[in-house]
Image (cartoon, rainbow, N blue to C red; front, side, top):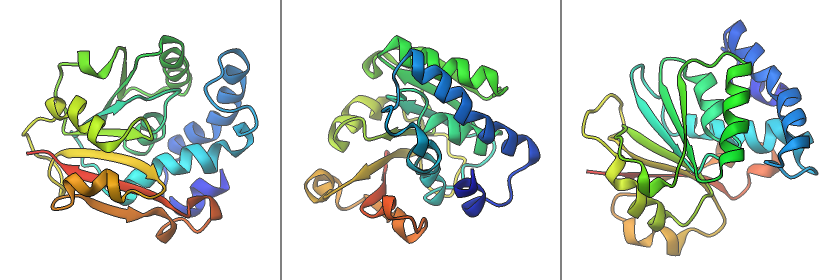
Length: 207
């Protein structure tokens, strides 16, 4: 939890309680349904929760914004973002039902009311949102092909509606098709732990 409080010191008491409850919940669920590497569960806050919150360094979602988490797995980045932005509606989508179940059960356990779920492939989702977020699900071009249809035109934020992905490694080839409009931040500029070297948030507006 100290990693979260270090970079997000203005959390409400309720948010602190929700974040602090995640470790025991994920530890318990991970023993039944493996959604996080068992070797990595002790790094939950640094490698998964704080990494998810890196999206908040790209955009501060305004109240009333709608966001789809494409390929949410066990709930990242959607669950931490839903805690951080209680006035924003999140819809978490994954094709693997047991992972969606973990995310749903944990969200219910901590009392998240701004989050919904779908056990579905992204291609099957018809609803529209202001933003789609994802965390290392597939190459940026593939995310764009599948999720472009899900971006609506109703604007709420300083950034135009679009797709925001948490990525790592050399992204030159991946971002080249979008070079005229892609925006990227280096998370190591914001989070000083060694883990964040090479980790980026990539944003592409969708007209």
